Amino acid sequence: MKSIPERKTPILIVDDDTGFLLTIKEVLVSAGMPEPALVSDSREVMALLREYRFKFVLLDLLMPHLSGMDLLTRIKSEFYDTECVMVTASDDIATAVSAMKDGAYDYLTKPVQYEKLVILIQRALERYCLRQGLSLYERKNTRGDLTDPSAFSDMVATDHAIIRVLRQVEMVAPTEYSVVITGESGTGKEMLARKIHELSNRSEGPFVALNMGAVSETLFTDELFGHTKGAYTGAAKERQGFFESAGGGTLFLDEITDLDITLQAGLLRVIQEKEYYRVGSTRSRDVDVRILVATNRDIFEEIKQKRFREDLFHRLNMFHIDIPPLRERRGDILPLAHLFLTQYTKETMKQITKISPDFSDYLMAQDYPGNIRELKNIIASAVLREKTDTLTLKSLGGTSQPDISQSADNLGEDRSLWRLDQVEKEHILAVLAKTGDNRTRAAKILGIGRKTLLRKLKSYASAANAADTEI
Image (cartoon, rainbow, N blue to C red; front, side, top):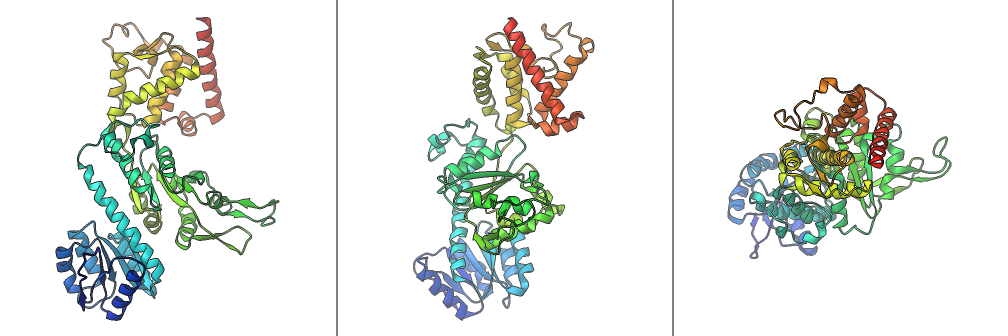
């Protein structure tokens, strides 16, 4: 059987069961979707794709001549952007999951739930259109390419690398897609997640952020799903979990790869079933949240090393945004520096209004392993030290200062003769800059307690304020 509608359609259904083909056609048309093309002989699929360029293909896994897996491989090698969904028997889900690894968008089990099928096709077509929009990114972008530049007026974004990211935000924000946000520490992943929420249809609902690295194994269920009164010793009253607190809004799971793999199955089940139970309750509650997740790790390496579940990744990764590091968006370095200068002069009540050319050159020459946080810390420290109206290289102090041994300002400075407290202070500030102001991590690197580190930082700030008062 082969049926091609007169009006161009984006949908192709492939199954050797003609009764199933006709049923799917009726379901889609009744749901207001385009009439699909139908074919029962898998050998004809590639020729049809070359002629009609379908955006979506529903493939039965088991067919004579060419199996669904064989066809998936051929389709993805020639038409990579075409979205494919596999239909499988309930006892062969492992093969369907393998198909997702090979590029399938998702899978359905027979008997097919038609309502779920309609939603799945709609989402797959949305993603296809998003991907086609992303193909425009081969050229450099400007703020003028954004649909609504004013929506990002609170963000420094002039470099084309970050404008590209903002275009992705504009495209995915109005959908219900879950999004995986990746990027090095300090690149602004949570800020981007908040922007997606602000531009979404859920903007009137709450934005709830949870650092998964801070969720212990014993508290995982309680933290995410809550508990009823008397659920366990000490549960004096009922408590909402994060899924419930974020109801009608967005749940942002930061550092998702920090979640222990033994706990990931529980999260996967909730995402799949779209329901959960409070601890101590037998009543299921519907999940009404959009999930955004972020990580600063290579999530594909985490999957490869069996530290992150591949099936959970595929459920979460309906759309992926990778934020470039600051060294790859150098056009934003000086605008960000001036923004932080304004912020910290206001906080310290100083009258610093300028950044000298040599200080600007220094900022542009750095690699920023700590990204925006590192730049922010450099400016904060320089503002704290500076006593004039201009930031210069002298504002950087000791170990933060670049190697300019031939500079007249640096001749005669012998670091071997520094006081011990000065060496300690500069080393602590340098470690903080390298860790993106992650004070827990910095304390661990320095071999001191976090409270000790905070006490030392407080003493530095007090000393700097006292010096300013004397002047």
